[in-house]
Image (cartoon, rainbow, N blue to C red; front, side):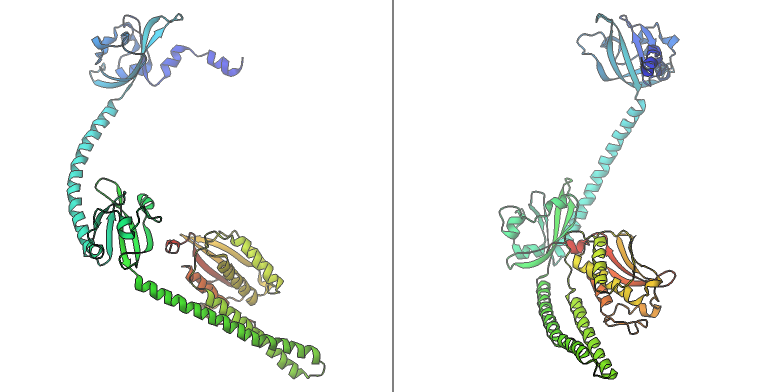
Amino acid sequence: MNSHSSLIDQLQLGDVLGTIPSGLFVVDLNMIVRYWNRAAERITGYSAEEAVGRHCSFLEGIPCGDSCGLYDEAVEKPVIGARCTIVKKSGQTVSLLKNIDYLRDGKGRIVGGVESFIDISRQKELEESLRQHAADLENRIEERTWELARSEARFRTVLDAMDDLAYISTQDFRLSFVNRAMRDQFGDILGGLCHAELYGFEAVCPWCPMERIRTNLTVRDERSFGPQRRIYEILHSPLQSDDGLIHKLAVCRDITERKAAEENLREANRELDAFAHTISHDLRGILSPVVTYMDYLGEQYGEVLDNQILQILGEVERQSERAIALLDDLLDLAQVGYVEPSGRMVALGKLVEEVETELRGAGLLGSHRLEVSDLPETWIPESLAYQVLVNLIRNACLYTDPKSGPIEIGCRLEGELNIYYVRDHGPGVSAEERKSIFEIFFRGQTAGQKRGTGVGLAIVRKIALRCQGNAWVEETPGGGATFCVSLSAQCPAAMAVSQ
């Protein structure tokens, strides 16, 4: 026999019944109390000595007495959750919630009954208080309903005075309100189905935002509809009706002219991009042979040319290479336009490894060492993230001595923004130059004879701004520069709207 079984065997039934938190008593077939536990003493005020041996009717229970169902065969046993009242020894009436059942001997014969009960007087008081509160609330609701009716009338008056189209549709897509501007364009469409009246569809629109509206989300959309097929920016908002259901309020602003201007601008940008590609290609075609010729002259005639001529050839070659690099950077800058979210998160840690491999292979990293902290993923396209990293890391390598310390790449969280940074321990950037450091072609006092086009940091800032972020430079504690780019941790809602 294990220790647990031995412990259970030591339990006495009376001890167990005496420790339960519910009042409990046992009666025989004549309703005489034969057992009365400690919780029954606490609830009723009667001690076991006062209760045992007495008929249970001394409690003046209601509806006990003649209607007691303990030994009534018509009353199914056990009785669970019955309610009654008794009178305590102090004379106070209390409400009880009780369970009743037979007691049987080993042969299954009824030899008595058992009743367990708890005091629910406080609960009854709370229920009464809640009923009174509900009645008061109902009165206040009636008052508020009248106030809301007035507010709704004012609300509809405001909508009716708007120049923008506005309508309210129910959850079954019925137009329950259309404002004056809407009536002027569509006529009397009140009560019609929104998808039929606005778009001419027999079925619900495939892009209908009603499901999201029901979850209290606000949805922004752009659609073309109406007799003249004009383009509208639509703000769909949840609107709770009198019946408690969520309806949809749609306010539609005509943006046809704006969209035409945007398209003209996009076309102009496409032409500008094509022009930039052409210029880049043609000028590279001119400059590349110059670099080749200078290199050829240096190799073939280096022994017969004097040092001054060789220096001139070398300078022509360097300036030509610089012009080619400038063309490439300007082309990259021109191509940073409207940013479409990538649709997937980009792992920046892995991207840093790719940038390091490329820069080291090109001889641009030298003996610099990179220290990379955990970098959260970003929603911006991988190509733009790559441009930010490669320009900031290359800039740090260009303007710092490898002996000054590692180049640190990390991120800190500020509110809803991820602040990505590239930190070096070089000469730093003066306070006067920090305002201009991201301007195109700007090169600071520490640039000296170092090769650079002054475009890389301008690309970084333009990408940050296009992604609704920002770029700036801070002083590194102990000396150096920390270049920072802020990006929203989540894709901004304005950029996630479907066009």
